[in-house]
Image 1 (spheres, rainbow, N blue to C red):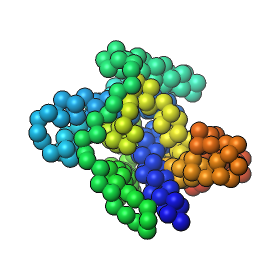
Image 2 (image 1 turned 90 degrees about the vertical axis):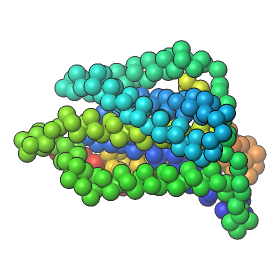
Image 3 (image 1 turned 180 degrees about the horizontal axis):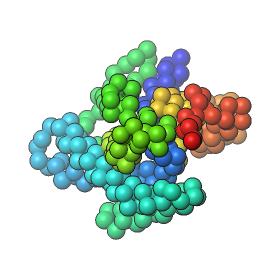
Image 4 (image 1 turned 90 degrees about the horizontal axis):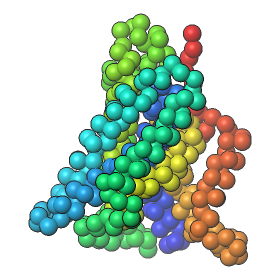
Length: 307
């Protein structure tokens, strides 16, 4: 029972990070029908920016929590600017092009960002400074650290803030109108280009925060750090229903739980034939099964109206 509770805690922590990244994918897809495969690299840049700030401020004597907050606060605007620049220079000129063109462009932007990161930070793995001393708290025999609690709190707060923005404000209504039908939204006086740019800015903010949290959680980063989390977050978005914001949150949590439980129990259930190294296969296998029987995901894909 202790192991079961521990895996729930680990799964929720991992799933919260996946959900935060998945929101960037699902928002962009919902508003311009683009799968932004460069979003994983935005997360990677956020992690590396946070790494540089923490490394620079670690000897300053500031409280570790303050240093982490400053690092995250630096990563978020950099990633927002990066998201805006990608949309303005790479995606906006291709908005009327066949859907394959922006998809290939997104892959190209991803490769460019990886190599830019290698030129600045090198290709070697970097040890993310673990300046916050781990403190253990016990829940029914399982343990949760103060870092895990901080990750959960930040992720839940950012997801709640995003949900409030999208569903409770006039700006959110304009974004939803643009996602549903940009032509009609434009006729109603909504600045469609501004809404699309804002979506990339918000996605960049989510990615920057997720990058800093990823470094705190896993402790090692490199210019390829964003690839696997990015693919898994995209999987989470599809699992929940691509274009569906609550679906991305649910998909991230479900994928995180599947991954941690597979890592813990797969060896036991298969008699040692498959170990924790096969957890990714299990997670993607479950995704395939779900999509075979529910192609639009758990909460349904948001489909744009056409005129």
